[in-house]
Length: 64
Image (cartoon, rainbow, N blue to C red; front, side, top):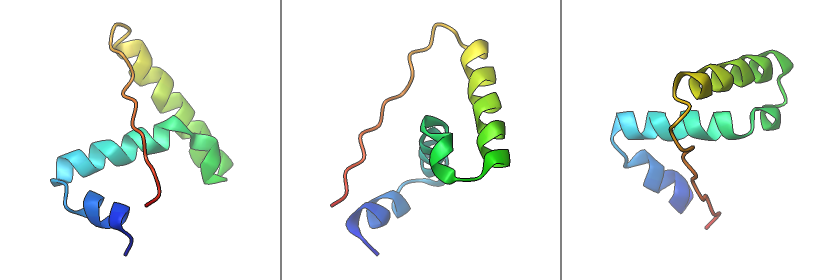
């Protein structure tokens, strides 16, 4: 287990879940699954439309 995985595993469940969703929504194409990719793009657009004034969360992930 690398340090990033260990760090994320120590987060409270709701925080880890939110982080996972943000990572998936950031680049759905990277998953290589057209059906899942399409669903994630639709979800991302619905979430953006629901909160137009909210700034997107930017997360910097570095391999360590």
